[in-house]
Length: 241
Image (cartoon, rainbow, N blue to C red):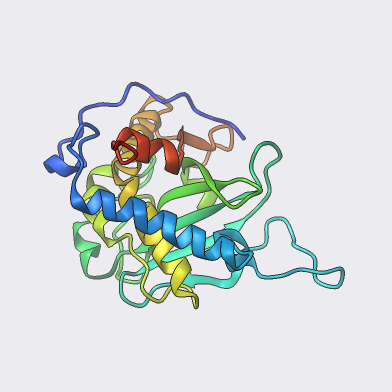
């Protein structure tokens, strides 16, 4: 993995609830406790978001690196979100989820990012754009968020400024067959919405520093940040008496 060093996080010109220092809201508290509840219910069944996504493997059908799970990706009919899990990097992770959104009715509002010798792309309703990736550890907990360069996922790259108003679309209703998985992802996106927004801005800033070398495999991960559900709850004061 090659990490392009991001620059300092600029001020994000977004609504008040998108700023990192926004006060705790009932929505954030609900997201945090909903995420914990969904994780606990999975654990009680001997499951976690990764095992629910990739299924069970044996000697005849082992888990394969680079393969997308679930087959055909998880696709939400209401939000246009698309998710797949795969593993191919050595180190502290088991694998990671890639999160995309379908352009849908907002296609005309999305501004693409292109190299200097390319014309700006026009997105169609069925086009996908990458939003964020989630690193998972061997216990099925999220430990990092990161963004990638265009060549990694091969989609039309969309500017952070265009994506930020779309972040409320990051919700799962029927993407997964298991309601617990839909709840877990929806609440994770809500709880770390600010972090996702900041990483997207950092990504665009990093692209500028490398002269928009979107297909240069020397630049893979453009911004990254460790996350912890419990640490975020502590930051929000949810453990106070």
